[in-house]
Image 1 (cartoon, helix red, strand yellow):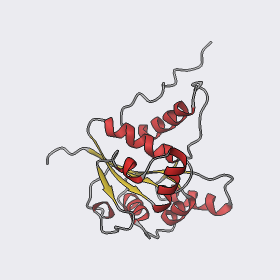
Image 2 (spheres, one colour):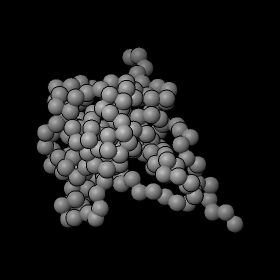
Image 3 (cartoon, one colour):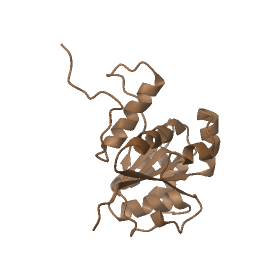
Image 4 (spheres, one colour):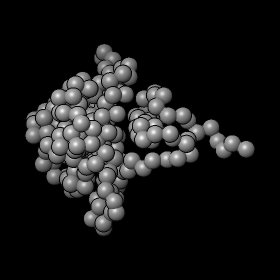
Length: 193
């Protein structure tokens, strides 16, 4: 069998934090041996424009392959499509609920369901605060199914000087989960005396 690139499905939903999905795509576009498959929800188009000024086409240009959110017959909707996992960045509470309950009502939820059933890595960068009990139970359900709940919370031990540095640090931590090399943020070297 010929070697294939590492395939990562990236979904951007309408939750705040569209910059995380954009930055993931920007970095992975430059990573050797990585192929990205992008899904952008209808609500994400609005959030992307509001938060970043980007249009759908600007974001789609960062991906290797683009899938329409309503195309439940897309390649990534099947377990026979070999991927290395999926990142939903950011992940709305609606998408979290769809994944937690196996609704597969659009390509984002279906692709996430496929990743879970095939025992691949699923990372949901959930965005909402404060959490209500439904949110917490849905996060627990996805975790019990093997998914990783990864709220994009900034860290400060590396003394970030900008929002971009905080975003890159979080994106780097997510990329680490897929074994992809990066230089987005410094590694922890222990406490300084």
